[in-house]
Length: 285
Ligand code: SAM
Image (tube, rainbow, N blue to C red; front, side):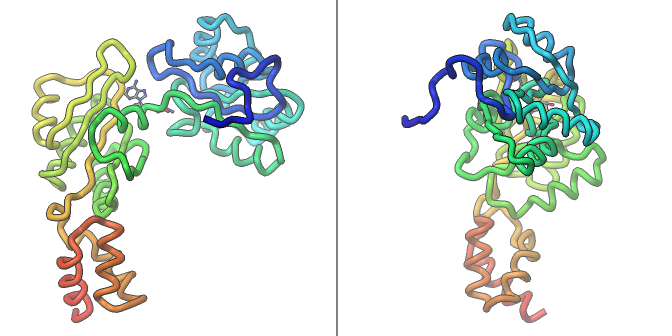
């Protein structure tokens, strides 16, 4: 392991904006660097001052807190950026990695544009922990935040992701899990699905199966707590070839059916021969 930065920064960290990941349930997951930065920060920008106040109290750290949520005004962000120019400023969310379905995107973008040093202090992230433990393909994944609440929008979102040759990762709320599993079962009855729940906490579990089998389980055992929902990629013989029509049409605009089938097979994992046959159909249509 090579590093130009010390294992634990000695003394006060340098001025800049530090994106600090915090535990997603288990306080033991705070990192040494996170503690050092929070101790040295002159200001801690946070989603909810009560939540972060509790974490800092547990760590024995006194810090000036500034609320920064999705509704923060440009003036609030400008003040935080100004402070980060002079001294170390930390950004935390209620739990996990800031910006990952959490506030901070605008602040980071504007801080970078203003020439302020932005550093990430990595740590817990529910999406990554779930992917690491679920046993679904982890070489390619697509994190898509929360699924829409309404049935139609949820199905449309899933349909749009149908040809993606990667494990799909979503955040989900316990009361909505069953409906989401039903929608997945209707679209992709054979794909492997995982529900990772209460990660790092006492009742942590990770259950895998088809969406229908998981729906049945959670109908009998209503889930509680926080959830990451994962859907395995389409297998070569699972994805209906029509799922890739839009991509095929795009590729056909650039080249012949053979080339188009090759490009789309690589992107989606769908069998090339099937795509070639479909490309011929689309060309003749
Ligand atoms: N930024 C956070 C991160 O890095 O994981 C995620 C914030 S997002 C607002 C909160 C969602 O993350 C929860 O609704 C749940 O879907 C997921 N989540 C957070 N903690 C979790 C945990 N301990 N176990 C399972 N899912 C969790």
